[in-house]
Image (cartoon, rainbow, N blue to C red):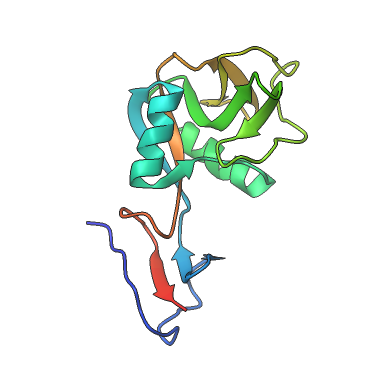
Length: 158
């Protein structure tokens, strides 16, 4: 069973934990901030699953995040894996599920511009992005949030 721990101080923090994140009210320590879900879902179903159980569909705004997501995708049961990337027809832009614009993309080929597309990475795909119909069903990667009821980290109240 996964633990979600609140503490009134930070006396018990250990230096051996590799990653930490600071949120509004909590100090969170994670040994792994991404989780692969080996269930085939549409992009929207994957988004809702992540938000309800873990935090958010994976956002990859740095090289280290792309590496973590690719490592998860390489263990997927589907050829492609959903991430928190989708094309919005209203703005005619790719945005992350958390609302941030993508900026420079890491597309496998030319960046696609079609309504109804969402972003994937490919198992063995070398950290490149692929646009796929959001109605396709694939495994997906969630970013783990400190406030998630299924958090894999240890959280300390500030």
